[in-house]
Image (cartoon, rainbow, N blue to C red; front, top):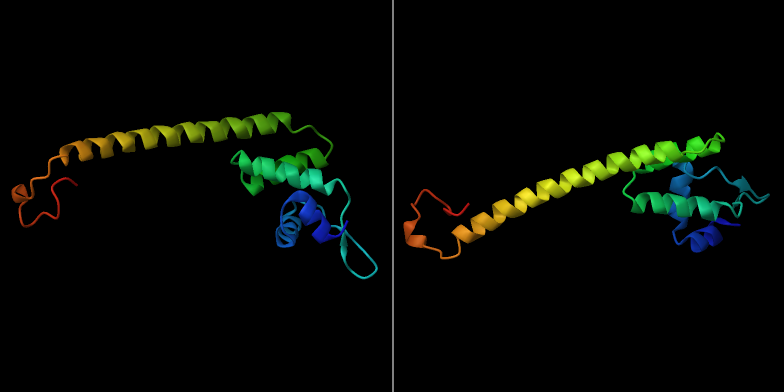
Length: 129
């Protein structure tokens, strides 16, 4: 399958496919006599896996690690679980930080609910921040 056909089947662009190939996410395609890339039908499933990994918040480097494990004939399940554990911990930390920020902003907003500009000194830009 030519690069344009693969791009359409995988819901991506030819430029993205060339990038994936350069990064090792997609094995180098065979070439036709005219020099066109000729991908195997399995490439669609591999690109779908890359997209699912990205949707789970994994980096392309992490996705490549998983693909490399599979390409060497091993099941990457434990590695995937470890990556997802790390990703989940990162998300939980981000949620905690965002929650703390929300509380801070809510408190500042409460203080500014009845503005009193006359109480600000000239050296202050705004006493509510």
